[in-house]
Every structure is written in C-alpha cells, then in structure tokens.
Image 1 (cartoon, rainbow, N blue to C red):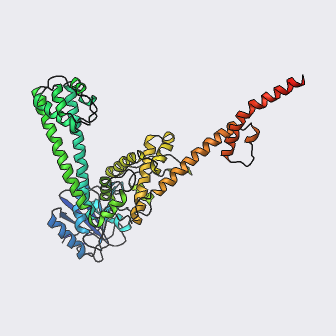
Image 2: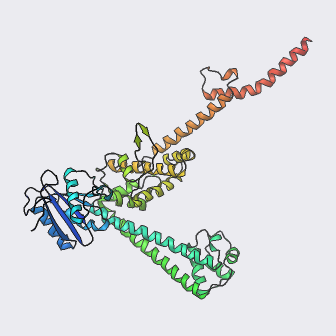
Length: 457
C-alpha cells in the first residue's frame, strides 16, 4: 500500500479519523487523514475503481484503518452505490455534502487528490452539513415514483403532439371536446386515423352518451380529409398513449405494494389531509420517508423543501428574499397538492388562501399554502395521528364570525351619528336592530311634529 503525505511520504497511519472521497464515474480518490487537521497532518491517498468489487475493497480498507467518518461530494447517481455499501456498517458515519459547500479554497491547486484532501479536512472539523438522504426502502420506492411521474409527463407530451398534428391539418377537435384523449376522443381519433374522414354517423357511433357536445358540432370541427402520412403518425401516437396508460397503471400497482406493510400507516395518515390523494401520499413518503428526526422542527423541513423564504438580514434590517432552490420533486409536488387543497370547501387551507390571495398574489399565497401542508405532514408523521377535521369546522366558524363582526362594525360606523348607536353597552346585533327601527320611526316623528305645528296655528 502506498500513501502520500502533504509534506512527506508515509505508509502507515495509526488512528485514522476522517476520510474524504472525490467521486467520479470510473474512479474514486480517497484520502484518510489523522492528526489535528493541519496541512502538515498525516494523510494517505489511494485510488479505487467504481466497480462493485472494488467498492467492497474500499470498505475493507477503511475498516482496517479504523476510519468510520466519511465525507463525499454529491455527484448524483455516482455517489449512491458507494453510500449504499458503506451504510451497511452500523457505526459508519457517512456524509454527502452539497457541491456548493465543498468548493476548494482559492489559491490551492485543483486536482482530484487535492480535492480529496480538502474533503478530509472538512470532514475532520465537521464544517459541512450532511445532505438529507432517506432510508434504503424509501430510495427504492422513489425510483418507482419518479418513473411514474416521467410516464405521466410523457403521456402529456404525446397529447400535445397529437393536438399539434390535428391543428396543422385543420382539425379543431379540442374546440368541441374538453379532453381529446377521453373515452369519446380516443375512439374518434382511432377511426380518423384508420379512415381519414368521418361522417356524422361515424361520430354518433363512437360518441359516449355522457358527452355534452352534439355529433353535428364535432363533424363540423373535424370536417376534412387527413393525409396518409398524418394518419400513420397519428396512429403511432395513439399507440404510444395506450402504452403509457398501461405502464402507468402497472407502476402505480407496484408503488402500492412497496408502500404497504409497515409504512402503510404513513400513507393513510397523509391522505387524510385536504388536497392529498393516495398517489400524493406515496410520492411524499418516497421523498422524505417516515423518520423525520433529522429535522428539528417543521420549519426546518419546510426550508429543506424550498418553501420558506431565505433569511436576509443586515445591520438589523430584514430584506425581502425568495425561496431557495430545492428538490424539484418535493417542491413541485407540494405546490400541486396546495392547488388541490384550495379547491376544497370550508377547510383551513382554502379559507386562508382565498382570504390572502389578493394581498399576497397567486404565487406567494400558493407557496404559503404548500408550506402549511409540509408543516401538517411533519406534525402528523411525528405523532402518527390523522388530520383533525374538527379544526376546519372551528376555523370556518371563526372566519365567518370575523366577517360578520367586520360587516357589523362597518354598518355601525356609518350610523355613528345616531343617538342609539353610541356606546350604550349594546352588542352589534342590538345596534343593527335599533338602526332598522329608527328608519321606520323617523317618518312618523316628522309627521306628528308637523301636525302639532298646524294645530297651534
């Protein structure tokens, strides 16, 4: 075994403390460091292959040096095989750092071995925060959830291609049907791809009974003849959509199986939140898992998900700041669920959104709702309790009471010049009743005063 020292060469290192790994596609530069972490400290550097057999040799080498503290840079899929093998050792403390925090200091040479040395120093002093990595079962589930999302996106792209093809040939099917890939739309498109021209009778046979559009309107929208080249392309695109549908169902079935068992309770708890479905709950536990002990509070989880504004304060002044960049899967998923939550009735999330959207704007308001969802999920997974719908009822009642009180205060302020609207200790209901009675009493009072004046004359 050959080793290098930043000052001298050395072959043995007693009492290894920290290890830094510079991971690449085909090789790994590993640096094990002892001492006080100074540039003159003892280091040993060795290069390993990224083949699976070489990774087990790396593990045995680290154990032989009594090195159980490792830091590597997050390099996407390249660092995951190493992490999966090292985490099998219970006492191994593995850290995967963000590349933003692991940049080499200015003035130092930039090589793979120097990067490994720098990572070992950062690991020794604990200067880098470890990235959040879920447990292995959830990482396996995440492969299916992300693939499921890609299939849904691919299906949407195929629908856009079909719409583009129809528009280029002068067919306006999307103007009369809300979903051109629905039950009626798919049957009409298949027959159009086979025949190239449709009559009213052909459309009437393929039209579903629940469709609100009439066959004459559809025939007028797709009146014409489609070329053979376009028909062949349309047929291939329709088959692609059918394959996507079958794969989406198959992958979702596997997702249900993998999320069952000991983690099924988490899915059942999350799907009780307004705006959450079973699919959304599976997506969430695949990204964050069920053990949230790494996050001290719900605010830490919201900040990790990129749903909380960054702290920007200088000289005692707080400046407005945007949310930070985060995982595209978690943030986009929570925003999508937040939009679904705003469509619910008499819930805390929907009431809060519609009460503040005019003041904050759509984007800020929906981001705030997504942050609330993350906080709900954190508390519910911590306690293992489902969503309490009685709080929605109390929140809705409180909101209606506030609106009624504001309306009554507005009416009372406009009638403040009347003697009965002064501070008599009456409630707002009595004030409004007094205002109603005064409107009827004032004409009678004026009429009696006029009659008394004429009688005196």
